[in-house]
Image (cartoon, rainbow, N blue to C red):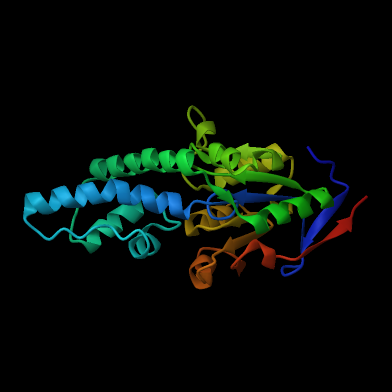
Length: 251
């Protein structure tokens, strides 16, 4: 763990922090292509079969428009439920869950076959934080969170990694929740009030706000400032390069 000889001051918030917790998806790693391709692999066969059984027109899943509207940075069950509702299709929870599980399988296949890229500006920000002596953690409710970081080549950059593989048999939830972020802060050895959270999803932002963290920052390159702000982000940026900081020495 890094020695806390300095604090990093987030200039736009005038907030000094000793550590920063990053959400994995959309902040550290860009999973858009892999996730959209996985949903198409899952939903197109389902939609085709549904159309044949119910004698309706088959309209395939649009990996750009439908993904951005219904799936991007949303809980999987919410996304697939709302997408299917847009096609006048209603499924019970277990069937929705089965589609989400299939998505995870195809998603990991896409990642393992084609790889995944880190967000360059976040890599630069983490290096700046390290130079300040600040701790860093990467948090994901997905079981594949740590694997995504390894395949992106950035796992070793973080002091703490916490993902869905840590949750079975514990009190930690397998979804965005304040307890996940608070556990990451505990492993970093910093209280929430001296820790910032940077998240890309509304559910992640809301969870961090409920955790009592010193700063909650949303990232949305598509310009969803109002949505993330409504969920508790006090600052919304399009890219982590927009988050200037400077070092403040402490005793």
